[in-house]
Length: 162
Ligand SMILES: CC(C)(COP(=O)(O)OP(=O)(O)OC[C@H]1O[C@@H](n2cnc3c(N)ncnc32)[C@H](O)[C@@H]1OP(=O)(O)O)[C@@H](O)C(=O)NCCC(=O)NCCS
Image (cartoon, rainbow, N blue to C red; front, top):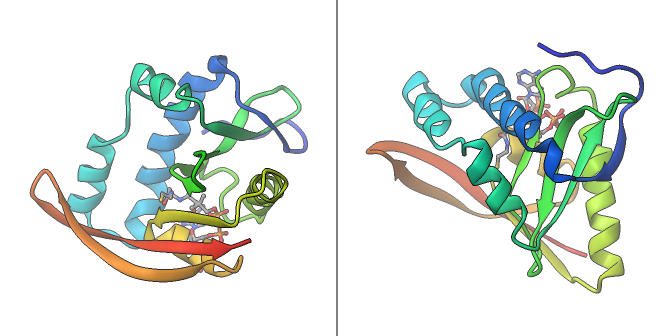
């Protein structure tokens, strides 16, 4: 697994990041998912990881996207923000997850949201993301139980008033 070259800093996403972001997405689900989800649930989640083309389309729809990148410019985490305050994607490479640096990425998003006049951020958080967001002042609105390809899985609707 790729390790960061020097300190990580926040920068805006560029379309050239897409292959690396798809890789982070897969590695994060595969390595961090099993702490909270069964093998069948992780496999179902992995089947939902978008292709590079699908991810490029999603990230290029007008939403804001930021990455945490090393000194060589390589991304190690990413987060997005849709115009209505929805945080759709938050994924960190297992090489840097759990070290505290992802907090800086989300703090950057929150500063942007406040400056843009947003009053509420919301997300559908995985179990790991739920713990991350709880530490940062987000509250759980409800547990969401649903299926992916017939596999029962759950996440948590969360929100933060800015
Ligand atoms: C959500 C995520 C970006 C949070 O970033 P983070 O740096 O891991 O945040 P935290 O350090 O607060 O860790 C949150 C939880 O992730 C788990 N975790 C973090 N790093 C881990 C690692 N390297 N390996 C396994 N689990 C890890 C832990 O269970 C942790 O909970 P805890 O602190 O109560 O033990 C990151 O955990 C991630 O990418 N997870 C997998 C993908 C995912 O769930 N994305 C959200 C989709 S809604």
